[in-house]
Amino acid sequence: MRKSRILTGVGIAAVALLALTGCNSGSPASPGAGEGTTPTSDKPLFEVAKDVKLTGSPTFDRITKNGKVTIGVKEDQPGLGYKDATTGERTGFDIDIARWVAASLGYGEDKIEFKAIPSANREQAIVNGDVDYYVGTYSITEKRQQVISFAGPYFVTGQGLLVRKSEDTIKSEKDLAGKTVCSATGSTPLQNIEANFPDTKTVGLDVYSACVEQLINKQVDAVTTDQAILIGYAAQDPDELKVVGEPFTTEKYGVGLAKDDTALQTFINTMFTDGGDTWKAIFEKNLGASGMKVTQPEVAK
Ligand code: GLU
Image 1: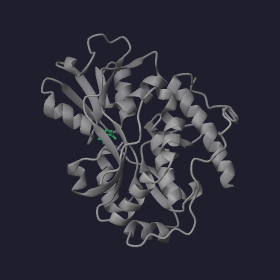
Image 2: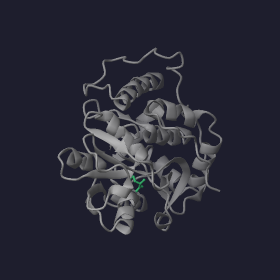
Image 3: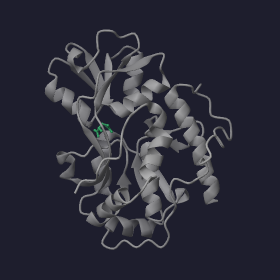
Image 4: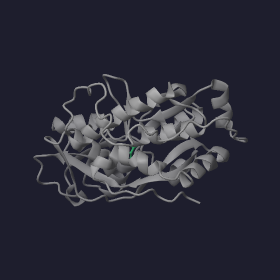
């Protein structure tokens, strides 16, 4: 049972890589695509732990009571947090990080409920206990730390720009005066434009895929958010879209969790610190083909 799930995961990885290299025609991959392409392809990324004890964690108590883990994620960000509309399969670096945390707590794929929560609603979902933790391009910020806690960081990227392939007037963030840029409501990139780019108009939407649609339809001039997210959209539609410029902020991704749950925070941080090659394997599987050069960041002390 567990083994077949893991094998399915390998098939999905192949789809994710195809999407990132821009070779995906949009149709679902044929069954078994990618299997056997590497000698290690049936090696699970991580094992589901047994008999896990975690005292002093209200979140773990709730997970135990529910018999499942509820994880907040994104589902429209290829390579990071993505749900295939046809198969319903979830893929991406964040999704596998979320699965790795669940597995370390003793919960396999059949005991995970994923909930898609947009950027603006993350803190509230955690505070309300609608999710046990959140893994979805979630930058660690002091403001957010007033209401929730983060484990990590587990990934570092920075704000970038996505424009139409035909665009030649926007080459970096220095060219944004008089332009209209779209980003997600409640996100740090949107806040940055509003605070520091007074001559730039902003459009705030629920999710980034809606911004990308507006970009393709010429309703906005650029989409701004973390470059890791934008690279995924550009790879999906290389004939229409391109990423320009260099990252102009630093975004450190953390696992969002309940503010007072230091037991869970320490558990996840220890997992990241002592995880051996697992982080690297998750990165390679999901973002290896993206060309991004990222190493695992050191966990905050
Ligand atoms: N990492 C940024 C943030 O947390 C942008 C990506 C997102 O909205 O998830 O606000």
